[in-house]
Image (tube, rainbow, N blue to C red; front, side, top):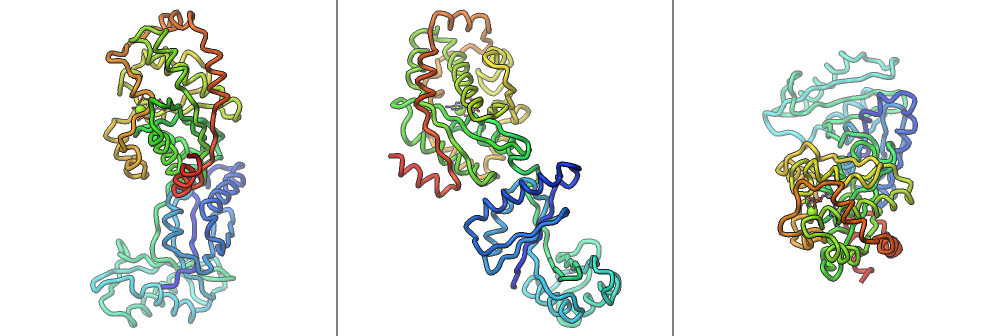
Length: 401
Ligand code: ATP
Ligand code: MG
């Protein structure tokens, strides 16, 4: 079947009043970026929806990419034809051919924006339904719960026919809510946190701390790959890789063992916050979920969070680990997160980190150490890369080494 168009319906943005125009503009840009390799595609939008003309590009491939774009409520492959009864009848039949099995049911639903069209909505439904029944075998009508909901939208300039609605990713267009920095480890949680932040319209840049030679190059590749996975939802992902070895060594040397983890997190947060400021972002996102591990008790969060007044967003706070892992499978980060390369936190985790660290105590321990030169050195050694797709994440890695 020759689907030549895709109709895209906007989600929540339809209700956003004054901002609507800029939301739609942003969504359009995001769609163009994700479909940038499909050069023949043409775009048209009005206030209710967007129409993509495929011009021969692969419909299935494009649909699978559209599924990841936030701000899309639903979309449908469509066939366009002239707004004449004969053409619509012919096209309705082709739209349904090959799409049903004996015993399948269908329903015709017509929407008539072109009021001068010769038949009204009910007459159209009956006419096209009758035409399909006459020319097919084994199909029956079910108006309540049809297998094939054939929709016909008649406009003056053209008519669009669709037989299936695909659910979109929902949410708001990435970039419509501002920018935040995602602290991205190699684990399961932080990529999922990034996904949820993007879903609500944040544009996200990632910060990763790595500690060679304690952490391997493969561990770094894992994070680059994860950034590549997330790039699917925003069109691209900028990743800042921070060399953290010296800072971690100094922590090991100068901070009492059961407080090293708290100190590590506080320093990571301070460095991430500086990058945030430089990049004009307004929040930091982490993959923390309350009570999951020693560093994620409320006391820990309080002691760590104290180094900054920047909002820290924790999209996974109410989720169980099993739910987070389920989600990681759904969004395609699971296979990468499960690779066994350890990150700097895992390696330096003390045997018994304090689960209830005291802010005053960690501040006291840190007051004997001058971390500032190392923070500056780390900041000066940051490597920043922008990744556009998973494939590119691999190429990028090859380039770096
Ligand atoms: P994750 O599955 O995301 O690794 P986790 O359950 O291992 O999380 P922690 O190790 O306590 O939990 O990390 C909590 C959060 O701190 C992570 O979700 C991430 O946002 C941030 N984080 C941890 N390690 C790093 C790192 N090496 N670089 C950047 N951010 C990190
Ligand atoms: Mg981790």
